[in-house]
Image 1: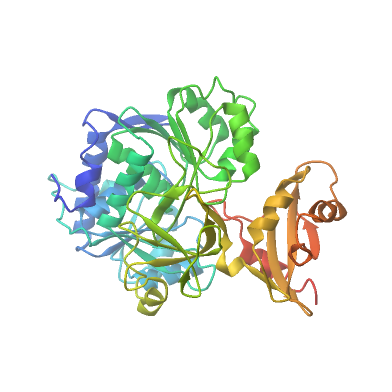
Image 2: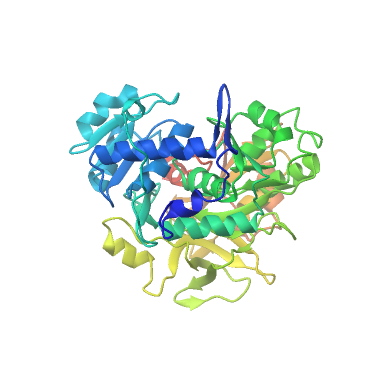
Length: 497
């Protein structure tokens, strides 16, 4: 049905036509044949709207199965899918749309006028969370034949969060997405017998290119939830086999009274990613459910790079081993670091993106000519080959000329009784250049700054210890659960002035 170099040729091949792909709350189940028939109709509508191979389709809509069909339709029509976070403001959207110059924009019906005003030159269609909208009203006519695409043709552009400047559009090819999804399907043993609880957003690589693509490639089914809902997830577990989530999923599920070993008795796999999983959460989950969470590591530009093993030692605090076909090395000042030494992670493999959209200089800075991508994440590889991430290079604190890796300090603080979690940042200091500051969320009780200091004495060199500890009700996070250290640094920039 599809050209063999086309991502769709793999996504459409696994599921039997009459098998259920998605189970939805308060809406009918959708079969694989229904999923792709709807996608074909949407693809015809996109082409009628002027979409040509290589054109971008920008999408900012609420999560729905129709939005998944739109992703498939875009790729089917030879277009490039551009999902946009539903939290983006008009100012942010103006940048993305002017940078990507999409031929078609799909938005919520309530924002049609707004997008019509800022989407210069684009055809604007609508899609609501309930599956209605002008995209669905169009009469597409005859069945659609997928546009042949080559392995290196673009399938998607995903914009990074822009924490170090302007957001960059990571260009992902058909081969990038297909290879990584196939690797994950095999590494995590997904088959057509699986039922995945899907509660992630689909504007991000985790929910779209990991959860959705892996399920499709395996011919599996999904409990398709519009958002994270602890009650709905716990209710689904007896009839499901796997859950993919972010650390916040697991901390909130641990608070659910009905999370028991009996509840998860049918589950075979819990995966966590997109943000670091605390060792404490890992251990509490194992004690409560009898399952050890499988933590993995990836990013927008590469999809997944490493994973703890499906069979074998899932080591809390690590992101596991390089995935099959993915090379990983630790570099510092142009030299590859030995085992146990900290440096910047670089990766190479079929999963690594094609570069940044319309940013050749930035691409040249971060993607080496020989294919190695400089991730900007700092970490080390232990003597067993497991990778540990200690933080972003930009998050490293240099105080009095000494390097401090926040993860080392955070791990010790998080282990102190009464601490729920912490974030360590560097802020300007008149004497030391930067000072180590700890932001702490209490678990319970009235743990004090003195308690934190006393616990760290003898555990850390003095220069690594926080010069000040502040207590917050919660840490600021983005939609995927990552702590926003840039925002914390901005908030406390004048702390020592």
